[in-house]
Length: 70
Image (cartoon, rainbow, N blue to C red; front, side, top):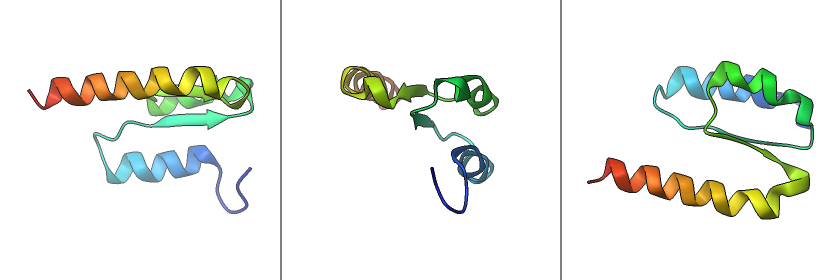
């Protein structure tokens, strides 16, 4: 929970400002995953599973970054 903005409001500002940004949502609320689709997130991580999911997302990000730099 953020006091002034929610994650979707922050995502909107970032997407408007940086057209090619890749967003990873991290939330304790599984039911927000469908709301996140509006922003075409790179990933949606569940806090309850973050230790399992975060390394996989980092690997995917590294793979994408490396393929763009070739």
